[in-house]
Image (cartoon, rainbow, N blue to C red; front, side, top):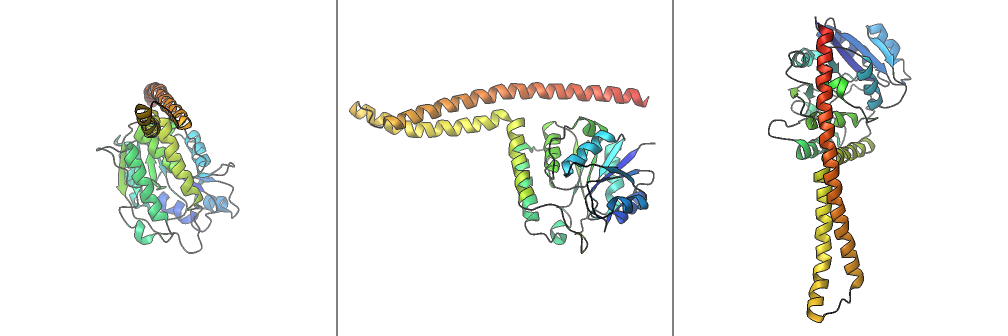
Length: 315
């Protein structure tokens, strides 16, 4: 029988956690329900334990830190990650897990934006932020086969291959952006399942800061774009520098052809420096792109090794 682990990162979710645990125990009989308490001060851990969850603790604050510990600690055939705020109904859990267990997906995204999110969500700018992040990611990493609809959802299912080969670097809410980009960049199987969404109940508050965490998410996108697509990133920077350099150089050169003099020597110096910087940017992009390709080769070999060891373990 396949082992399913339900992973619930929690920080002060005492109002909703008991219902969430019960709902997913009913939806996935036999699954292990893990609640990772992240320094809650409202007895979330005790309430979850009473509802039947296995309690673990992560003392480094931040959702990324919690997910790092979850992925490192737990072994299962399928991992279902949900939030503890009771915003995701449990009726889609079995379908999402089936896609992973049947080998049809390495990551299944619970897509809120195609259902009730914009009607239910009452937090200003959250909807706009979701759409903006989605547009950036699909613009930088999307292709005709894979278009991400909901980047910031906390409702996902994962294969062991994804969980055990994903290097978690983010510490906060930007982790969801990081795992989405990782799956796209490494050509992993991604599926989306439309899920219902309901807003938090009265008295329950989101831990996501619209502006601070939104800025971190956007910064993560551009940082990962630089890391994962260095030739495009530094090529773009180099092109902009070269165009600016030529725009400065052409008037100086035209005047030199007419008069034989270079009265705007500082402009010529700046233009030369910018062209040199453009050249160096292109060179950096080529070097880092070569290293990036080697990293992808190593990642593929690591996935092959992981699968070989897992298949041997299951025999």
